[in-house]
Length: 255
Length: 92
Length: 203
Image 1 (cartoon, rainbow over the protein chains, first blue to last red):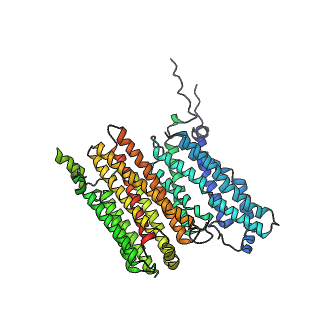
Image 2: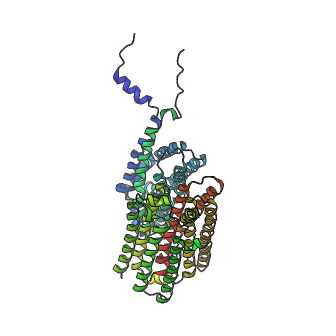
Image 3: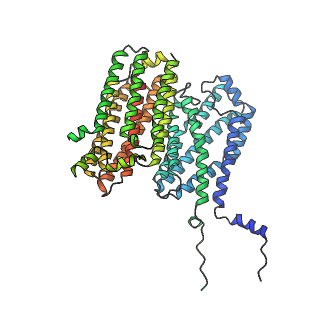
């Protein structure tokens, strides 16, 4: 005798049984993480837009000892672990592409080194200023330079990441992600490359807060970051369940 | 061989090369003193614009492309050189 | 028969006249997306260069005098010639004449490969003379923009090699692929034409 199924329990079961749950969790962590990141870097600590590389020492010392920087570093320390989860979204899609595994590995290593150098190092540098009062102004200035250069100068890692991703999309026969996104990702790579002069210029359009290396790069980067995740959303949604890694084989019909 | 020489594409190339050499000479003679020279700059930039348009129109085959592509590329040439000349003269 | 062949060699196919009304987008449309976007991005760099130039006329003029205009001009002609042979090669490929197309693309590749070599002949003496990206704003622009462009050239040469391989090894070469590669290469040429005027020629 069949009992009427409880609709609420059915719904509960439905989302937990969703085969793509892992991907959706990873995906939805992204807006959370990025918003947190944005909050930390902009209104809280005013690290972004980048401060001038030619700031005077008293300004730098004030900044490193500021209360807001302390809060920003606390949040960053707690939330940093979500970076790999966001990156997992890219890797899940590139895995479905027909291209060589070398692209996925390159992307993975690029993402790892990028996160370490581009996020962890600045966190240490600014964290040292915030959590450990008592360093001399000269040391604080060095940490300030180190932090910003690591944040913006870590372009090499991201170059590898985006070049691998862009090329993979362009060469992919399965058309997981649209070709125009591949080309847009190549532009991402180009803007990372244009950031190379930040190591040399301390002012002007090629400094780390410059028109060419930062502001224009941002006008290309911000839309790209939104668009890429939109495309990934569509890709996750449209992936046939049978293709999933955790797809169960079709049950055998009783004779 | 003669068909290659008479080919419209080759004629365009000959024009482009001639004009390249001409503008180099303009810059060498007229602008040799390496001072601000509005004549040289205007000439050189306008020539560059014409060259770009020729390459886009003939080599990239935009002359046989749909209207939207013609408009976009021509718009880029006109817009870019207008801005370049505009900023140049505005900053003098 | 020869009339059609000659007609095709001049790039004016019978079918093209019919298609003329609709308009034909050569190659993969997504490559055009890239080309237009790249032209716009470089366009921004060009205009920003002009903006900073007019604020630093003296500096830019004196620095410009150190550039090797001869090599710049020769490089321009190299790229133009390379583009010519790419265009001729594309027309030949469309006419079904793979042998001609292959020959023309080899010539195009030779002209194109001359560019990076000549560029080294330009850069190495300059760097030896202590003219580096860090010297001043002009030289930063010079190295960054010609450097970005050089990356584009190298990528274009790689793409051309793939086109040559396609023409050589397959019975039915993919015309769309040839056109796509050609479109990219011509864009590289157009960018250089502007760079040459902005960096070497203008006063």
